[in-house]
Length: 215
Image (tube, rainbow, N blue to C red):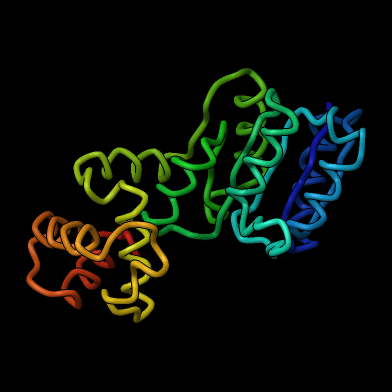
């Protein structure tokens, strides 16, 4: 069994490695800490093609040269090189906006927040994924299920709009960042205000925080 562990915290990589070695003593483990290291390994090392399962942290240092920004891009790179590789995503984020982004764009086989991860949970997570079962933590699954009631907030562009508004961007600036027109952005914001029952942009951000989409 060949594992690739991707996280920029050495002690976390060590912890994952210890659990894997206890349960899969014959396994081979590669540890990577940045998006550049991931790119170099999967694009140039023949051993990479033997990877059975990759554990990927969402927040890892980007590789701007290849536009690999985070764990979602890493997951898609790994799948491009090894379509059969199992992908487990891990994140410290608990905000819906990040959880939904990871589910939709990385399509992981397994997904836990780091706060939920114990050695026993990690063992069970790996076992289930290797048995071809999707395995999401209770929190991840509940977050996804709740989001189905707010369909307008699942949309990729709407999540980007909410995130940028929360960071202080003005609506007039958003079409320079998000590839849709200013009028389309206005319509999306109006729809989200209707869904969250608020009147203005500050109220929209505040409601998004209250509903767990932002922190």
